[in-house]
Length: 229
Image (cartoon, rainbow, N blue to C red):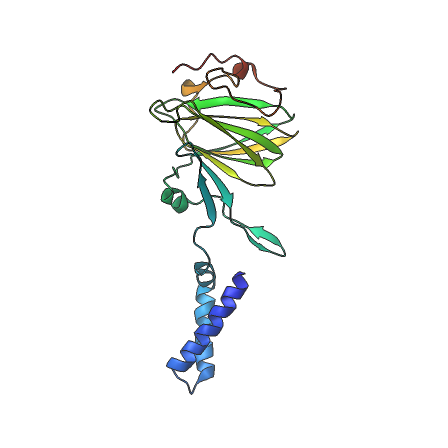
């Protein structure tokens, strides 16, 4: 695709310079165009492509987004942007990520959650499943939000490559759907253990429906108290 753009631009630029600069010296014009394209090849090729290479879809929980890749495919595979400060800012998302974490889970049915950090260290997360599959849950715990205590679930897999943006003021957790599942997080705040909070995955306040039984869970996650609001 990029090669096609490059050739089209090269042919148009050659004709333009040949016609306007010196119609009697086409070789000189061609040389000048080749130099121009050598200098600006990448800028020219990519500037003619769509500038927004990620697909942002806001969920019914305001501020939470599903982000999908816009792939540039060829016979090698594909190339895609998975994060961009400018695009995040344009959609009103927090572009500040200060830590990245990996969660690896041996067994299908492993549950982690529901977790969040309290103010002043509330954090946004960008979550992607890089191996296997998860049922990912977010819960709106912003007291002033019209969707307070509502939740949504999403299927994130290594194959669909979707990203989930979880804004500040949300709790997050997931259940693995396959063995050997890996999840990659980008975090907007540093880990602050004294401000780490959570509630149980089966807290009746929220009534979260999970797609299958929980097989593996930490003692901490199993014994969180009821959510206090």
